[in-house]
Length: 384
Ligand SMILES: NC(=O)C1=CN([C@@H]2O[C@H](COP(=O)(O)OP(=O)(O)OC[C@H]3O[C@@H](n4cnc5c(N)ncnc54)[C@H](O)[C@@H]3O)[C@@H](O)[C@H]2O)C=CC1
Ligand SMILES: O=C(O)C(=O)Cc1ccc(O)cc1
Image (cartoon, rainbow, N blue to C red; front, side, top):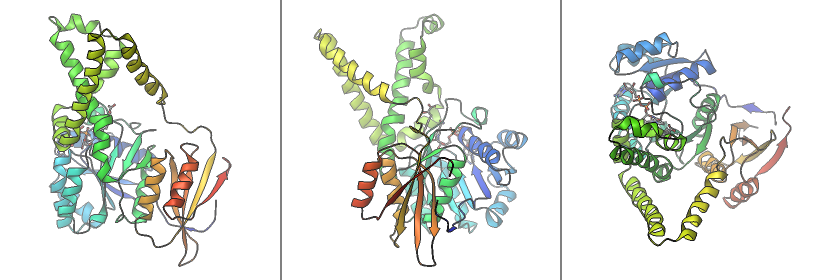
């Protein structure tokens, strides 16, 4: 790897986690395990949750939202706020943080991005301080009881930088999240809700529908549900999630969820039609198509080999460069293990990314070149 003065990206040493439920407490626990020197201040409306977080050693301080200790932490120490409440609660925190003169970075974990981004834009005097995030890991067990230190291990964590996002802030967040075991994917915030409707929100409502179907046919629920094999359990686990949380997600992403469910009903209608027409070939073709696609999804996203690739791109005062480059890398399936800025001289810097052996490197180079970047690629031996 090239020598040179590195920007210190591990600079988040004082982090506030607001909402210590499944996601927030898992974040706090993992951050503390990753680096004990990081101070994590936890905030929740539920006092029992605060006590558990402190007892487990997942936070170094904790208070209710109106606690003086929270205000003092934000005013004097805090460099990063992670909002891990339902999305509807975020606006009040943006307002509170602004009133306390907070100028550090705010990120979040909400399942939808439109509402929280619009609230941030309304409230924050400088929208570049908000970098939206969304871990694609979770569970049907909500609250701190469901929290696990390894929840994000190997999971994708969507981050939505845009042209306003300062490179150093994005890089520092990337460093923290990869340190927590997650694999960071950049996605434009405008594309997030439509994409996630298909892979998360529609599946949740389909899972609930399957449970409804079975319930409609269960005189004695226990007897019918005892017949469930793994398939039913696999496809319905998420239906046990918090109804309040999911109703919130549904209305925050109403149009995309609605359109996805309509499309889903059209797909089911094709199965119904094939049955009605005794069309075995059509039914088999439909099943074959989805079986092939399902089999091609890896159980775990793992690099093909331990080979790493260093990608270096001169930085030419181009606004939003980091968002653009990382979004292109995510689009072609490349996994950025680390990303840093090499300041070669006072006026010349290079964006330096280490990629694992995944994705379409050829397409990455072409897309970066087409976007006007000068790119150099260097295979790295694992021992370097
Ligand atoms: N459940 C899941 O699998 C996933 C959830 N998310 C998102 O992460 C966020 C948190 O979800 P979960 O952790 O699952 O929810 P949760 O219900 O497990 O935890 C939420 C926590 O926030 C607290 N809380 C609620 N309102 C608050 C407020 N105004 N101020 C401070 N604390 C407050 C609650 O007491 C609770 O401890 C949501 O936006 C959700 O959409 C993201 C990925 C996965
Ligand atoms: O439990 C699971 O498998 C999930 O899919 C959890 C989940 C729930 C909500 C999200 O926004 C992201 C992930």
